[in-house]
Length: 373
Image (cartoon, rainbow, N blue to C red; front, side):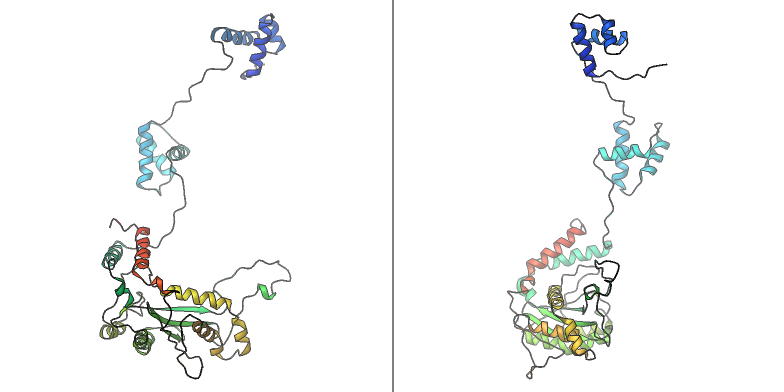
């Protein structure tokens, strides 16, 4: 029976050297350690000639790929990171005489610092719109702060009574806990579920808060502008206004653009697919936080068939709590439109200045790699 070729351990080799140096013969030493005579003689010979018991450092197996081959593989993935190792290995095997596997390609990539990662998803912006966004950023880069003080920001938002419209997950046990009030999401009928609002603001304060029902179209939006835009401008004390709104279809409708052309011709026109730099989003955030903290369910339970005691009324009450806001009704009743021109700039409106808007736009440009456009 052929003995398996197993390398002798360092401890056995040292034991062989110890017994041989004590005067024992090579054959007797080999019997003591249960090895062949030739193995013992080989260990003793190398110890006498080179004074070592360890093996020499061996060379590793020669690399299958040359540096030129490795550069070819790396260059393929640098040019197109979405390639697969299977396709590159097949192309390599067709062009070169050396045959490699996809695992070899992966090892070459990892050795060069390239790792397989999931691609991030980012909103696509066309080359044309990227250039328009860059030109818009450059045109407003050096605007003075007095210019931003005359900009009137307008936007719409939606507030739900019971949080998000989507699916809400809760942690509970499967049995006998699904109807626990803590594990339920409330619903409301007769239009008391949510509130749709339009609002405008500037560096001087808040404009009118307008509620509307249903889906807003260009006709409804035009009526809101006619009834509230000029009134808000007068209350805010703005002379020459620059109206800023996003590129929603109802904002860019023909009749809306014609009305804006004759009533507020100096608009702050943003490019398509541009970032939403409207500071009014911070107002929506403040209203949303206060809206969730208040006991909205109690207002609806008291008068479930009266919409004004639902989400609309709650938002109006929160609106009155904003620092500097004033009720414009003499009898104290809450109306559908609210003007708060005296809001202190020390609360939210430092966001409406040139530095903050420029900083947010620079972040957006860097995110879309527009600095070299």
